[in-house]
Amino acid sequence: MLDNVDPPRHSQVATPKAALKTLRTHALTRWIAGTALLLFLCSSTRHLLFKSTAFDLGIYDQVVYLISQGLPAISTFLGFHHMGNHTAYSVYLLAPLYRLYPSVYWLLLVQAVCLALGAWPTFLLARQAGLTQSLAQAMAAAYLLYPVIFNVNLFDFHPEVMMPPVLLLAIWAARADRKLIFCLAIVFVLGCKDALSPVIAAMGLWLLLFEKRRFYGLFALLTGTGWFLLATQVIIPSLSGNEAAAVKRYAYLGDSVFGIAQNLILKPGIVLGRIFSFSTVSYLVLLLSPLVWGLSPRYLAPLISASPTLIFNILSDAEGQRSLQGQYSLPILPFLLVSVIAALAAEKTWLRSRRWIMLWSLIGFLAIAKWTWFFTEPREVRDSWQATREAIALIPPHDGGVITNNYLGAHLSQRPFVTLVRTRTFNQDLAQSDYLLFNLDHIAVQSQEKTAKVLQRIQKQPEFELTYERDEVYLFQRKQISQP
Image 1 (tube, rainbow, N blue to C red):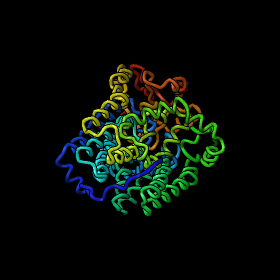
Image 2: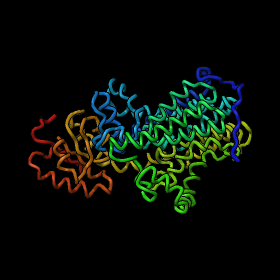
Image 3: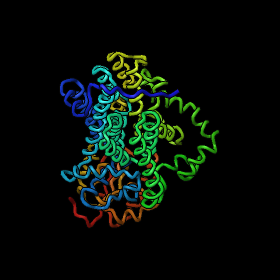
Image 4: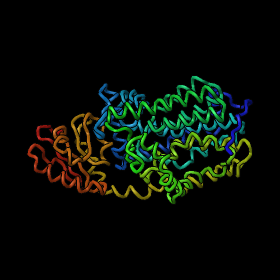
C-alpha cells in the first residue's frame, strides 16, 4: 500500500536563502559548479566534433536566434512555428542571451547549469525532510551521478533540461507553503514541453491525496490538465497540423490523443503485452538501479506524478524512449528522488551511509552513463573535420539560405532559412537557398541515398557552382552570391 509521511516542520534548512548560505560552507557548491563545467565541456566538445544534430540542437538554436532578432519563431527544419512543436514557451526566456551575442553555446551552457543546479533543491528537499547535512549531500550526489543527467546533456538540446531544478523547487515550495514560488515554478515547467502537462496534473493528484496540500494539488491538477488540452487540441494543431508531436509513436493505439487514451482502456491485452515485455523490464532495471537502494514500497506515492511519463515511454514504438540515453526519462527523476528521501528519512532504505550511497551512485554512473562516447564516436569524423570547418567558414553567418546534412545543421542554424536534404521539396528549398553543404564522410545511413540524389541534381543546376571540395566535403554556392 502506498503511504506518505509529512515532512518534519523542524527542518534545519527552512528556506532557499538559508540553504544557499549553508551551501557556501560545504562541498555541494563545488559539486554543482564542477558538474556544470564538466557537462558544458562535454556537450561543447561533441558539438565541435560535428556530432550534434539539427534535430534538436539546430531547431532550438534557430528558433531562439529568430526570437532574439524579433522575427517569427518558425523553424524551417520543421516547417512550422516553434509553438506548434512542443509548445515550449519557456524557450522565449533564452532570447536575451542571444541578444547579447548569438551563439549556440548559450543553449549548451543553460543546459549544463540547469542540469547541475538540480542538486540544490534536492539538497533542500532532503534537509526539509529532516535528513542530516551529510545525507542531504549524499542525495545531491545521487542526483548529479544519475546517468540520465550526463546522457541527456550529450543529446543535443531539449527545453525540458531546464525543468529538473524548477520542478524539485516546486515540490519543496508546496511542502513549505510557498504559494508564489510554487505557482511560478509550475507555469515555467509547463512551458518546457507539452508532455510535462500530464506530469504536472498527476503531481496535483499526489499533492492533493497524499500530501494533503489542497491549494497546491488543485493548482497543479487544473493547470496541468488545462494546458494539456489547450496545447494538444488548439495550439499544436493550428500551428503544425498535428495534434501532438509524438502521436505516431502510438499509432497501434489510435491516431489522436483521445483515441489513444480510449484504447488504453478498451485494449488491455495490447497494453499489458507492452508492459510485461523484456524491453520494459530492461528499461525499468536501468531506470531504477541507480536508486534502488532507497526505494521502499511504503514511500512510492510521489511516483504517481511520474506515471504519465513512465506510461508514455513503455507504450511507445520508439525504443529510444525506453533507454537512459535521451531526455525521455528526465521527468521521472525528481519523483524518484523524493521517494528515496522519504524512505531515507524513515530509515527504511538498504543504504543509510553517505559513503555507501555515493559509492553506489558512482557505480551506477560508470555502468550506465554514456561517458565512453568520447573514446569511440569521435573517430568517425577525424578525416573530414578540418575540411568541414573550412567549408562552414565560407558561409556568411546569419545570411543566406542553406541546405545541409543533419550533423552540420546546428552549425548553420542562425539564419531565417536552413533545412536538411529533402528530395520531395527540393525545388522549393533550392529557391530559398544560396548554399548547399554536404559531408559525405559523416552522414547518417538513411540519408546517404537522398544526399546522393540531391548532389546529382545540384550539379545540373546552372545557377549553382561547386566552390569547395575536400575529403568528401562539398560546398555549392549560388553564382550571383559573391565569395565571402
